[in-house]
Structures are given as structure tokens and as C-alpha cells.
Length: 110
Image 1 (cartoon, rainbow, N blue to C red):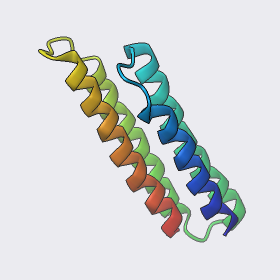
Image 2: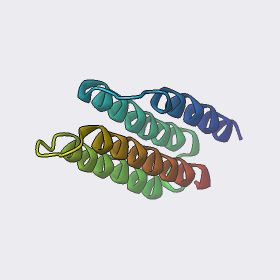
Image 3: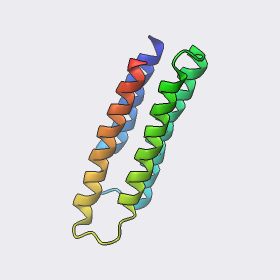
């Protein structure tokens, strides 16, 4: 129960930080990406410590998915030939929000 409350507070903090940026710099976008996904991975590790080896493989899959999301989004951020940078980075922000929501929902189901 405590973990679910923590996830809700974490989600609010993460997306409040991302939501109000008008045009993030590449540096800040990378920091946000790292911050969000590392918090999700950390929550998986905390869940594993609290619950033992019950569903450790499911938590490991979530961690692997978070790492794959990080890799995919970093490639998109580092793309050089983009026509409209503002739209491109806004789309990356939206994708980060959606994937982080999905990962947090998976953690809540554990």
C-alpha cells in the first residue's frame, strides 16, 4: 500500500517537472530522461528488496524494459537531421510520459 502511494507521488513530481517546460534543451531533456527512468528502476529494486524473490523475474523484466526505453529515446534525442526541433523534442517528452506511465502501472500491479 505504501509503495502505491509512493508511485502516485513520484509520478506527480516527475510529470510536474516535465509538463511545464516549454522548450527543453537537449541537456535538460537527457537529464529528465535519466531521472525518470532511474527512479522507475530504483522503485523496482526497492520492491524486490521488500518482497524477496517472489516475483523478481517480473521486476527484472520491467527494469529491462526501462533500459530499452532509455536507449530508444536517447537515440531519438541524438538524431541530428530533424526539420522541426521543437515538435521533435515535444514528441519525445510525450513518449517519455507514456512509457513512464506504462512502467509505473506495471510496478503497481506487482
